[in-house]
Image (tube, rainbow, N blue to C red; front, side, top):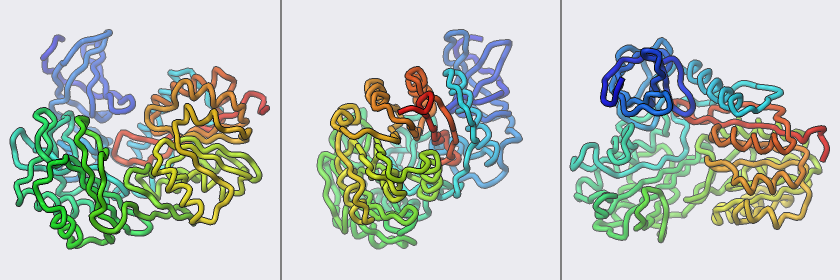
Length: 457
């Protein structure tokens, strides 16, 4: 095999997150976005380290692990749901094996492997989605939706979607028509011109409150008042609680704000987990699957054990969801740390709203802020972003000498790396349980309970 050759491969398995592989003439061929059991046509991109890397061209023969119906109308080109065609149990089994293989390869000894818990909802579960403006083909008409598979530029306009609330699709379609009628251009990252960048929609699953957030450059060649009125006139099942506009003149294709204006209502929505209420602001982290979050946090609460009269650290706490659940469970005191300042403001407001006086949340980088914590923790809960815990922060966390650490991970590769550090420092991995928070996608949450060797503080 050589570069640009077109070959046929039977997919034997998939490594996290989406690296499918098979063997041709004794050589391992790696191709993204395949499903175990598929026969696919691929084009060789490169040969490196004894492996052949290839690009998927088409599925020649479907796998018996794939469903016959229940896919959206554009699953073949949309980059949102890699595993949309997979049967539910097959997807769960594959994700569990992917994480187990990663931890085994990293030399992590797991005392109790407890499988994977499915999301209560397989479809319509997302309470947040960031939609991109662009074009479906170069210089084509304006599009609004998800990025195409294997593309950083082209966009697939959503006509339907299996993983978001139906109101999200209505809002996307309304916004697209609004801007098409006014010939408003999207921001072109190569030419650095145009206006439209992102449309972020968030909805409280328990409350039905909807927050719509439009992100543009400082060039706004349309009426924001008309945009607001259009959103408010849409036939939605939920209720609009806020319409926001942010200006982002940066080059990076990320949702950020140089300046934010409230066009209608407020800049947050309310959500409920268990019997607790949470104010979630525009840029605050909150689990995107509300019903799944209740399952996830039930696992965390179980792994943390009896926290009554115990000191708990909640690191990377977001809007304080886990910390407040621990506080409600009777912790003597909960100290939370979160980088996003507005999330910390919301966390402290949430604690007051829920009548909790035994938890405090601080704004700052965990790496630096842990130096300011003077209490001795009985339990540390860490829920870091995808890149995991900063290596220097791991050392500081270990130095607290907490008898128990509960690690909540949204990316098993960074989890495996971090667990190596904890294991080397004398922590044992007692329990591991997965939570499929994101059905039909490559993502999965992993909850790990670690204890110090000998159980000594």
